[in-house]
Amino acid sequence: MAETVENESEVRLRIAKLKGYRWYDNGQRPIALETYQGYPLYWDSLGAQPEPSEYCDLKRLPAWTREETAAWSLVEEMRQAGIVCEVLAIPEERKSKNGAYEIKLYNTDLFVHEVGETAPLTICRGWLAWQERIHHETRDNLVSELR
Image 1 (cartoon, rainbow, N blue to C red):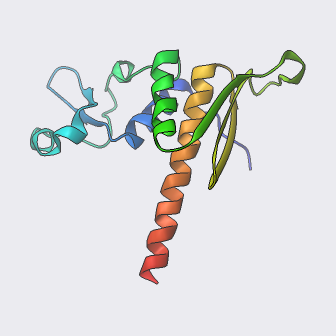
Image 2 (tube, rainbow, N blue to C red; image 1 turned 30 degrees about the horizontal axis):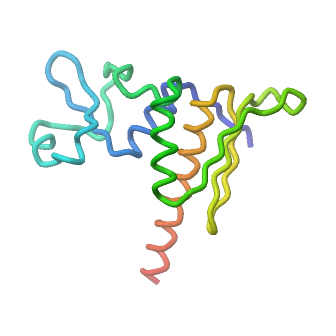
């Protein structure tokens, strides 16, 4: 099966959705609501949506894929969850077409290894892999409880 490569906008959108962002069309320019989880009833009453409209300005999302400080907030989130995070530059002799950076995430129940062209993009890929693992395990636990 061929692996699909997401562009930076797609990666940022996936992160925003997993973080609980919602989109609100204020009549002029749809905006991403980072504050949604703090005030869901308020924003829902104004029509906040789980998916952005086709003309939504995704540039207003944090630049997780490009800026180290934004990406580092994802590392801090993983560390707060008890995940050890190692973000490393790959030595020149080991570099491949897949990237120049790698991230290793681990604890007693997890090991994730991702590579990318830049440190922020690599961190994003690691965070997404961690989130997919969490959602997969949660889904499996729910199915087990229903049996």
